[in-house]
Image 1 (cartoon, protein in one colour):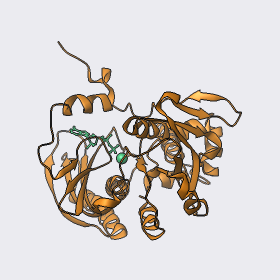
Image 2 (spheres, rainbow, N blue to C red):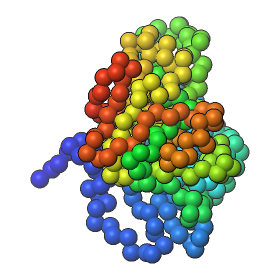
Image 3 (spheres, rainbow, N blue to C red):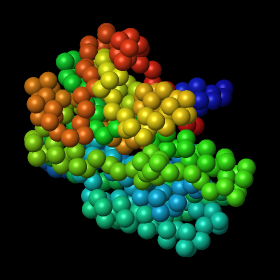
Image 4 (cartoon, rainbow, N blue to C red):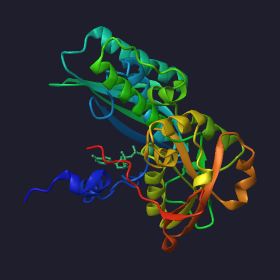
Length: 339
Ligand code: ADP
Ligand code: MG
């Protein structure tokens, strides 16, 4: 028998492949299934996360400069560490390269990696280098630290908790649509220069994302400990589903509470896309989705860049979106089928 991997989808495939791996070590306190794994070293825990970026699947060097690719490949991993309420300390970087890449090109990639290490204060401590027949693959592992009592999982949301979102959503996806369009125009007519005027924000969100270290630092200062947290890498809908599945709860998301940047809003309309669809299913925002105890609402209400966008419900109530027009829809997760 031969089963196509697409019948399972990305998350089904991961569940399938990892189902027969019991956790044997008492120090493994979180294995597969969250933004990062957690290893208990006696009080101070180690948090580990890996992501792989594949040319032609996750990036297109036609519009992604290698320096930006290096920066982004680090940032997407750090984002997973912050999503555990932890702080990244080290990274390893593994690359597979075809003979198309010169030393100068790889220097550019590593200039971006270095810029991210500088910006986030992490050390590059290792990796692996291999050749590939075609294309570039960059795999980064981030290692972080957290006191055991500060760890926040996807599984901690309870009915009545408030749903919070940082920053704004959908812009990175719209930046990608714009870059794809400019690439098509350029392929048809190489004399035409790309027109990205007035679109700096969305293009920046796609080419140079940042992880929300500032939020985790703020949580420590206030202090505030979210009940559950995940980073928004695959679109809000998909991440809400992860939280609901792992916490065994439902959710009500208010469309009016989902933050969307004005430039993203305008560009969506230009592309005849619904801005909320871009926010729900776009992906690559690297913002944080977290839930808080309602008693903590005053702690976030006056913080800049945090938006309250709904409430956690009982599992039986399902996962719903209350539109601006006042209609209730079932929320669908569809932002991750990139096999
Ligand atoms: P994220 O979007 O936060 O990076 P993923 O969706 O990539 O998370 O992964 C979900 C979980 O599955 C994580 O715990 C990750 O470590 C684990 N995982 C992903 N792929 C594999 C694999 N091939 N083998 C084992 N575990 C995996
Ligand atoms: Mg994640």
